[in-house]
Amino acid sequence: MEIYYMYTKLRRDFGRHPNLADEPAEVLADIRPDSHISDSFIDRNPVVTTVAVVPDMSEHEANTEMVEYKNSGMYHLEGGWPKDVDFTEVEHTIRYRKKVEKDEDYLIAISQLGAQVEELIKQNNAIDIYEEYFTHDVVDHSSEQPSAKTLTVFRDPAHKKGITRSAPYISWHPDGGRKMAVAYAIMEFQQQPDGMPVSSYVWDVNNPNTPEMELAPASQICCAVYNPKDPNVLISGLYNGQVTYWDTRKSTRQIDTSPIENSHRDPVYDICWLQSKTGTECASVSTDGNTFWWDIRRMGEPVDSLVLQGKNDPIVLGAVCMEYDPAAGPTKFMVGTEQGTVVSCNRKAKNPIDRVGASYTGHHGPVYALERNPFYSKYFVSIGDWTARIWMEDLKTPIMHTKYHNSYLTGGQWSPTRPGVFMTIKMDGTMDVWDYFYKQNDPTLQVQVTDQSLTSVKVQESGKMVAVGAQDGSVTLLDICDGLAQMQTGEKHAISAIFERETRREKNLEARQKELRLKAKKGAGNTHEVELDNNPDTVANIEKEFFDMINAKKDVDETNPLEVEIGA
Image 1: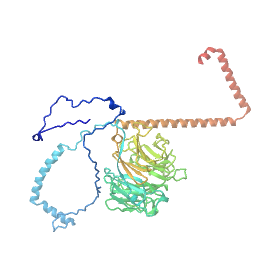
Image 2: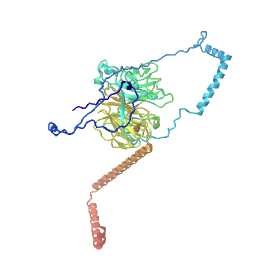
Image 3: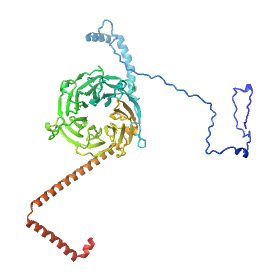
Image 4: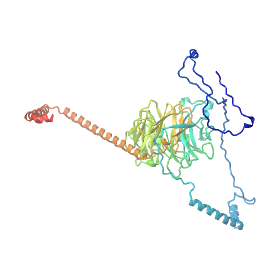
C-alpha cells in the first residue's frame, strides 16, 4: 500500500518567507495489522534498518604535488658609497664619515630622529610586551597518559642506491634544535660493499625530504658532535681511526684531519668536546684502547694520550662510549668498554699510574651508552647487555637496575629536563621510557619505533623531541608528551631521596658482606689452628671442659625446675 500526499502552492507564493506555526497532529492513514498477510513472513530479530533522506554524494580524492624546500644563500657586499670613495681602504671611509658628520643636514636629521627614538625607548622600558605572566604556574601532568607521536622520518639518501647503512650517532644543533647531524656508516667490516658512499648529512627538522648539508669525509663517519660554544663547528671520528672537524659556514669538505699515523688504529666510536677557554679541545676513544686529546687548531698529533689499562692488569680495554661532564670535574671522564666494564679516569691525576682509576663491573657485554645524570652528576647510568644500571661513583655495585629484557639493549640517554626519566633502545625496534618518579619496575612508555634494530638515540635539550636512529639508516623524530618532558612538582627532591636511599642500602649491604667475609676468614684461621694443634692432652682437656659444662647445666635444671619451665 503506497501513500501519496500532495503539497500545493501558488506560483506567487514561491520565494516568500514562510510563517511557521505549531499545528495539531493529523492522521493521514490508519493501517491495521492483517493476520492473513503475517503467515507469509518470518520474524527477524534483531532488525537493523537505515533510513536516509540525504541525497547520495560521490567521493573524490585529491593528491597535491609535494613542495620541496631548498636553502640558498646570498653574499652581500658593502655598498652605498660615492664613486670617488674606495670602501676597501679604511682611510677613505673614515675621511668620508668625518665629512658627513660635520654636515648641518646630517646633524639636524640626527637630532630629530634622536628625540623620536628616545621616546620609543622610554615606552619599551615602561612596558615589557614580552613579559610572561604565568611562568611560576606549574601544570600537573600526573593524570596525563604517557604518549609519543611520530613527527617525521629521515631516510638515508644512499638507500635509493640499494645500499643500507645504519645511523650509529646523532647530534642535535645546540642553538634551538632546528638541525641535527646524523652519522651514517656500516660498522661490520665484512659487509661493506664496493662503491659504498661515505657521506653523512645535516638535516633540517622541517625538511625531511632533502638534507641541508652533506659532509664528505675520506672514510665513514662513526660519530659527530656539534661544538657547544660554536654551533658552526663539528668534530667527527672516522671509521679508519682519524679525527676531523668541519665548519659548516665554509665548505662541505673537512677543514683539517689528523694524520693516519697519529690516529686510532680502530674506528672512533665516541668523541666529545672538553671544557676549555678556547673551546677547541676534544677527546676521542676507540676499541684500540687509546684515548686521545686533540686541539682542532693543531691536528697534526694528539695533545695527550692515555691507554685504558688497569694498574695490575695487563689487558687493554677497548672503548665503546665516553662520558664527559664538566660538573663532575673538568679533567674527569668515564669510558664504557667492550668488556662490560666502566672505567673512571682523570687526565690530570697526581700520579700517572692513577689516571685510570675506579672500575665498575656488572655488565655481561659491551657498554653501549654511558651518561651522568644532568641534575646529580655523581650518579650515572650505563646501558649494555639486557639491562640499564644506575651507579653511584663511590660504590662498585649498581644501586638500581632495570629488569632483564628479552631483547638486547643498544643505547639510551637521560632526559635533560627531568632527573628521573631516561630512555633505552633495543634490538627489537622498541624504545622504553622509564620514569622513576612514578614507578621503577616497568617502563612508563614503550614505543615500537620500527621493525629494525635501533642503533642510536638523542634527546633534544628541551626534552620534547627524541631522534632515534635505526639499522636501516632511518632516523625517526618523536614528540613525547609534556608529562614526560616537564619537571613535576617535588620531583627533584623525590629523585634525590630515592638515589640517597638506594645508596645507603647498597653501602649497608657492602658493609655486611665485608663483615661476613672477615668472620669467614677468622673462622677459617681458627679451624686451621685447631687442626694444627693435634696434641692428645689438648683434646682431652677440651672434652673435659665440655662435659663439665653439660653436667653443671643438668644440676641447675634439677635444682630449679620452675625456672626451667618458665624459661621454656
